[in-house]
Image 1: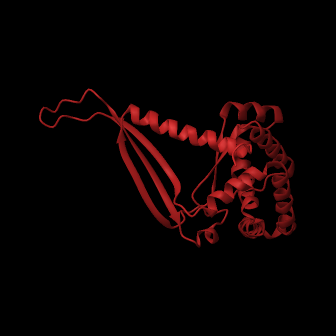
Image 2: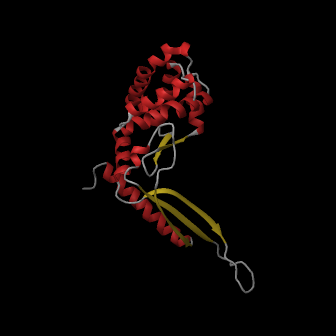
Length: 228
């Protein structure tokens, strides 16, 4: 169990995270059940951490162990469950002589949760989570691709034209999946997975890219209220 960071360090990490979120240097992806994954711009993180007077390693440790789980708990409306689980986990690592620290943990974590809510939680982030967890369709879990050449079976010579193989994995989580989430137990949630794998050439990829780009453009217009 990671040590509880000093509150001033937590606030410094939160301040850096806030600036990176606002600059789109931390991006959020939601998994099939709404679990959050963060894509952090390395160069901007180093610069922001230096300005805040903390090491990048310290930022990552506190962000991963404290800030991101709290952000997920706030988004899910599960702060009370998070506090209960966190206090129980920390309490096992604290000695009897640290009773005051143990007793102060719930209020300390709730204070941190309030700070996370104030600085990092936005209506857009909440809405993205709700869209993902309320979907009645299978949800994207992973995607992958590879490029290869086919071989002529009779001559064993490679064809001159390479091709791409695209693969998507989607999953439909079980209805009870939301109740299985705990901040310290990031296990896979049960559900039925399906795979879509196909070979395509460059023209097919152009069509696919254009279709996705059109969907992205329409989504942006809808967010701005340009589409009824």
